[in-house]
Structure formats: structure tokens, C-alpha cells
Length: 489
Image (cartoon, rainbow, N blue to C red; front, top):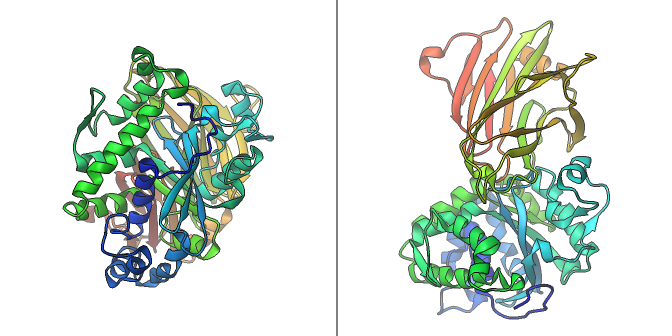
């Protein structure tokens, strides 16, 4: 079966499953599986309304009014689904290996177009690609598969839709929203459903991603399957997964609810809506994958795996943020130590990343280090270059580097913060927003803040009690979700 640009209109379990995950995450727990209600009656039932309110809170209960429109009861709605492989991390969550366009119409799910992004029309591209993409991926255009270059999912989705429309793909002009899901969604669901076997292949939550990747990349050859049909196993897999979900949905309702809550909070499901009212609700709940708007201090560390296979699965990151007062300015040092615990194999190679750190506008770079190499502002003998730019109200600094299997390397940026940080401290307040990159995993965070001539009187989150009563703030945690720190003097 050739999946390239076939116009299909049929019920498709894979996409029913994806719709279920997203809708379920917003609280619509019973939509696909309650047989004694019509869809409209179900949406109007007290049970569903109560579940929505539990999920999004009283303040956002108005989402109930969007349901008929979102699910295509007022008119057909079209959504672009992006399957973000975060074992090959990209700024917008992961490499876009596959995509699907589906339409919801009166409770029916119609597949318009799907497939691997390697098969999408070459006109689904654009100009103005970041130079690093052209250089390191050896391409001459900015392709659909690389379109999620911004760490802000709204900005990435707008670019993805632009490229999708450029290719004149089916449903391009009717799309109402973009939904991104990472591999964590699949692993999390299988921890609840348990293992199952398809075509002699045993899938578990621990091996499901590796098995699917292998079958799509190599295993199809051993089973005498044509290249154009190599992703057919995905259909069979998701049909089986759907069967398991339908069989144990209500018996494991609390587990599924907790899972989707976690996936949304940890930004492994992100949603972009072209409907302004719904976009507002998504943003307020931090489900949209947007960069935070803040007048205080800010940090977001962003990696882009460029031709390093699926190596992110074996990369450990230790992110450190230090703030000190120096020469009448606050100076920051943001650094990450990468530990490559893998070895050379079909999924793993040297880790090759273009890394950017996003900081407050007005910050000025002082120096940067990549391993034992140093860049110093205005120095004539710098050993490498540092890129800089402005995006979405934030300044960023970027470098490209590599790490061989079994090695460690530390990337560090030292920079002065804008005067507004000094003004905030003088006004007895300091706020820091640290955002997790969409789809990133296995990162530990250490914070050390030293303030000038004033003691801390309160901090959220609090330090260990034995550290109270001085000018310093220290905190360690796993970076699994966006974090906000508020310190009063």
C-alpha cells in the first residue's frame, strides 16, 4: 500500500486513538465509548460537563461551549497531527517523522492525508531556512519535516502550516488546529494497557519505540515488505492499541486521566488552535507549548539534534543556573553538562546539537565555552563563533557542538542581565521563569542565586530550612515541567 498522497475517507483507529488522547486530556472521558447517548446528548450530559470542569477548573469551564464546534457538529473541523520523535530532539518537540490530517464531522473521523514526512510533496517547504539547517542537514530548502525550529509551539505550528499549504496538501486551507505528541504518549499508554504481540513482535512500554523504529527503518526488509509499505505496521499496531484501550478504559479511568494530566503538564502533548478563545484557554493552562511572557528573569535551554540519529534517548543533561552581582550588574551563567551514555549502533552516534539558550532581551553575552574551548567577547583569538538573535521577545545565544559516545561535555554561556533585574531587586522582588523544552527528558536543574546586600524573606518554592535567612537561594530538582520562582526581600 502506497501511503503517499492517497485521498482516504474512512474510519481510522490510529487517529481515533490520537483524538481520544487529546480530547480525553481536556476531560471528555467518555466520548468514543458510550453507546447509549448520541454525540450531541453526550456533550450536553451532566457527567461530561462535570469531568471537563474537574479537568480545566471552574475558571475555564466555558470550554464546554466549544465542544460541538471542536468536534465538528456545527461544521467539519480539520486538524493537523504531528508525531514528534523526541529521541531525535528538535526545538519544537522532536523530529516530525510522521503527520496526519484528519477531519471531524458529526462524530465521524475521516483521514484526509497521512504518511511519513519523507514522502510529503517537496513543495511543502519554504525559503529563509536557518543557515545551520542548510549546512548540517545538507539541504537546499527549509522542509516541512524541519519546520518546528522555534521552541514556541505556536510559532512552530504557524511555520508548519505555512509549509503544508505551500504543498497544496489536502485540507490545508481548512485546518483549525495543530496537535503535537511525543513518544512519551505511546510509552505511557502501554504502561497501562500492558504488552501485546503483533505479527510475532512483542511490544512493551520499554521497547515499543525501539521496535517500531527498527521495523520502519530496517525490519521491513527482512519481512520482504516494500519501502513504500514499511509504515503499514503502524496501522496494525494502533488498531491493536485501540482495542486494548476500549477494553480497559473505564476500569483504568483514573490511570488514564492521571497520565494525560502528566503528558500535558510535561509538554509531551501540545496543542495550537486557530480559534482565539480556545487558544486563550490553552495558553492559560500551559497546554499550548508557548514561551512565557515575563518581565523578570528567564531561561530556556533548547537543543536541536541535527543528523545525530535517535541519540537523545541516551543523553543526560545537568542544567545549572548561577546569578551573581558583579560590577553594578547582575551576571548570569547558564551551563549544561551533557553525558553521552550510548555507543555506536543503528540508533546512536555522536551527539550533534545546535544549542540555543533563551534569556531576557537586553542581556549581553560576555563569554561562552564548549568543552575546553572558549569564546570571549571582543577577543581576537576566539576558537569558535557564537550566534545571537531575538525571537518572541527573548534574546538567544547559540553554538554547534558534538559529543562522542561515552563522553561528557559542558556548554556554558556567561552574560550580563538587563538593568530591569536590578530594578526588580531594589523593589524587593525577583522572579525567574525556567521553561522546559517540549519533549525533552532526563534533565536535572541546579540553581544558585546570590543577591546584593539584602536578605531573602520568602521564596517560592522554598529552600531547605537550614539555608534560610541569608542573601543566597539554592534549589535542585528534575526539570520535568515549566518552573516559576518568586523571591521577596
